[in-house]
Length: 277
Image (cartoon, rainbow, N blue to C red; front, side, top):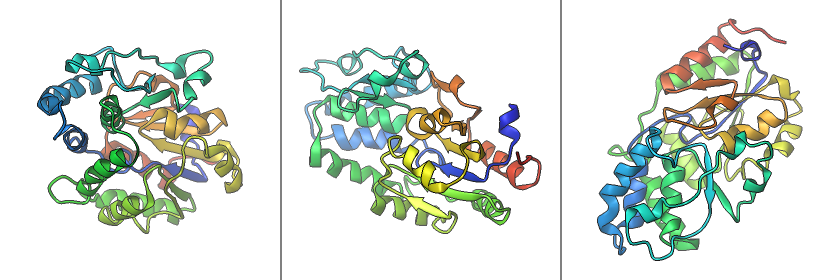
């Protein structure tokens, strides 16, 4: 554990998807929603298998990289969907050219990879979001949804009782986000809940509005660029939670791979084992 990591924060900003639950069911479902009833329907099993290889670092295309935001031109095979240049931009001396959202997207997990592949075959606008909502609805179903974690609920409660301000900040739409929070029994676990957050662009203003020195803020999320980068640039501590191979994992103050490990870490912050600066 690094020295800065042992300081108890005054505020913790959490992401939601992939952070306060983990699953390996939803991103294959996203592929199914977008590829079924299209000319590429037969590719679904091969795409899902290829995604597994990417998530575990067995392909040049990996998590923690930026890729060009463009549809494939008349793809003839699964390989064509993945035939794009990849850049671990956050490790570059100047990554800012890759922050242009009209030109590049950041792939960090099964969600972002599946959504990127959907756009590679031409999904866009309302048609894209209509199909994506099917996957979001699966998250609150017994068949595909994650299970509520009572230990996580208890750990969050202990932090709040210890005076740590907890903020949930998610790019998810508010309707589906609140449905998921209620399903996970986390709707009363935070002092502030923000959906449609426009991360990371909104973070500088949010940090200013919190009125807490950045060295006393901790960001926890599964997507380095979206959840952690802006906070790190402003001097906050960062924790990446991801089971996958992530190319830019070395940037963050701490790396956690499982929800159980995250719960254990949060408990150390609420049991007086961390020190205040």
